[in-house]
Amino acid sequence: MKKIAIACVAAAVLASGIARAHDDDDRWDRREAVHEFVTLPAGVRFPEGITANPRTGEIYVATFDFGPNKNKLLRYSRHGKLIAERDFGGTPLLGLAFDREDRKVYIANVATLTGVPSLGASRIQRIAADFNAATPIEEVAALPSIGAPGPRTVGNPDGSVDTIAFGSGGAPAPNAMDFDGAGRLYVSDSFQGAIFYIDGAAGCVPATCVVTTLVHDPLLATAGFPPFGANGVAASRDGSTLFVANTGDDRVLKVDVNAKTVGIFAESINGADGVAFDEDGRLWVAANQNDEVVALNRNGRVIARLGEFRGIDRQGAPKGLLFPASLVIVDDWMYVTNLALPLTGATGDEPEEDVKLWTVSRIRLPER
Image 1: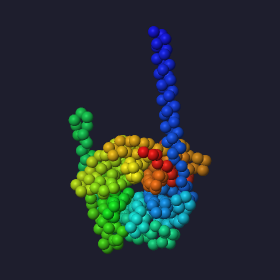
Image 2 (image 1 turned 180 degrees about the vertical axis):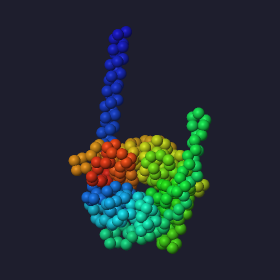
Image 3 (image 1 turned 135 degrees about the vertical axis):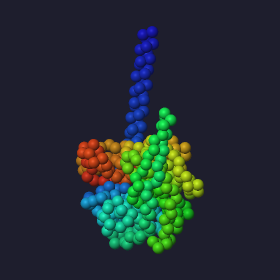
Image 4 (image 1 turned 45 degrees about the vertical axis):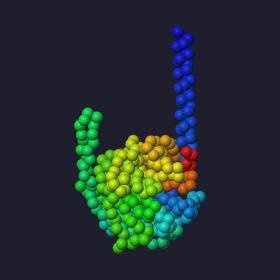
């Protein structure tokens, strides 16, 4: 009997060792998948939005800085050389989108959030893809002020129901954008809990650009942390469905474009932020509070996890991923902004406090 017990213990220890070795291999793979693409110029902080020109492979990065540092739109070659930067001064920027039709970069400007009237309203802008420091910034449209959505009811296991009421304010906060195949531009609004769209955005000017509300729903708002509701948005290939991250609720939502309904697609993605489809139909999601990107299959199941935070180097740059915010996929590579933005207001509880240089990471996509 003793021999059998010893054998069982030995087998358990061996199995445990194998499991640990396997886990270590997984962690190694996750770590080695992430490479530094660029370090932002000195004094340029908090990279948030990102997009790419699929024809040239150029990468565009926007910053979300409430000062005193200036905000920038940066243009990099596919090899990471800084080609141009456009100054946006005190206006923080969020999401970016590239339109193949007019070859321009669309920009989510969140000026309203600064509380500085001279910076104007939160709005969508655009600029030529081959911009330089002096290229004019074009206005597209301001987002309407529609306020917060109605209350949300949440059922509990004991049969009781909680009601979440959202604030009556809700300043316009355009966060992420995506074009569908017909040239319609979708825009998420984090604080108003809404998805807007602009038909024919490439051909319109402020006098003719019409911003229409697709859905205004409590599932697109949040009372969670980080305090951003509707965030990353990606249209399905046929344009019938939008997949929208809700950052504070750790969810990815599914919006039926024709029925104008919102449902839950995936849960428990810690700080779900930017989203994008790859060529194999996997939906990649930046989990900004877990310092990783995850892939979802068509059923909303996590089928891959890449990246991790590995500390801060001697120069003050994050190693690996730190607060990954937005992502864009070009061929077999995914580019991810490391926002590295402290959020809590406390001292010493977040590694983001120690960052002195900000980065964009590059990850080779795993084969399906």
